Image 1 (spheres, rainbow, N blue to C red):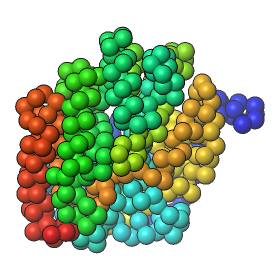
Image 2 (cartoon, rainbow, N blue to C red):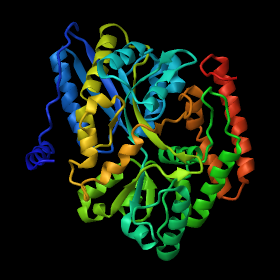
Image 3 (cartoon, helix red, strand yellow):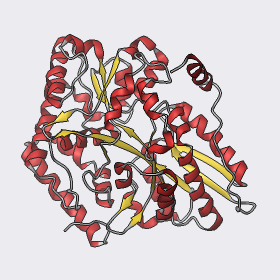
Image 4 (tube, rainbow, N blue to C red):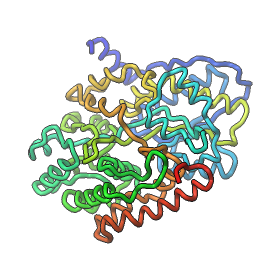
Length: 443
């Protein structure tokens, strides 16, 4: 990257890059849309988004308002607004909204338009927004974040892994050695929170297990899942502390920043927060791609999914759909101002991404710290892997069946075989309920 380019990027940290807003026209006076979003983990992103939304509204004769809440509050908010028949126009979800499909507009028209406008969409984004059993798009997935490894370089170098762990066996061996020598544990949650949900699935996938198969049949109770659960219990007992049973969505970020863990799985928000506080400490954080298990390496993703409740109609609905498409067209700015947290579901919208990963525009040491993540961009998974994220998968997530299953084994309450069998039984009942409504395949 040239010195001039770096100077322009530095200036943009203080002066937002203008969004390429194009007036669509056709919206009558008085048209208004309201958005409900999660407070982004990188505050700079919300500053950019507010400016984009207001510029878009002014260009299109639409009043735009934005409310933000903690991401954990969004499912309850969406449920309440659908039930009451009124509320926000667009709601951006970080966890799957599939269970609300009957109260949402089918967004097949703008998903198809996006494919025409922007080219191919990442498979994991498609799987997290399209419901094949009903042939509907319950949402529009424009962005995602990788759940990659973040590790303390000094600690892992001392136990023989200067590049961090590459496999889950190395995570156990190295994490155990670091814990024994320093008392600093690995930080992978085993609680009912967003990060534990993703981390436990990621490990189960890497061992060859999953909740469902490609055809949406429940396959949780398998030797591969049992082996993954036994591994996680061993990891907790040998390299982690009991704190992981009370993990929240902020816990691993806070622990990494405080130097209290040797390894976490998380997008880059924890690292970026540390970078803003102490550049030297941030330079001691390395990234890993998805760790490999017996069945390979699969990186989990958190999806940014926009939904429009069925109560939205007329000009408001048309404006909301156009706003989503125009936001997607401007996803370069979303990725940049999220400090590479938001990655594009439509890769063509952020042509600069390979260059940014190779030479971080936000001054990482080394400059290519993010380069290792490029390998996972086209080989990542959403919650329903290897099938779609259907309403049953969303309910399994909402009931926290997977991390609770693992925690009971780690606590010594059940064997891995018993815990998986019990969880499988509950998951079968959930799938049967949604399958009876024609919203889940298989059977």
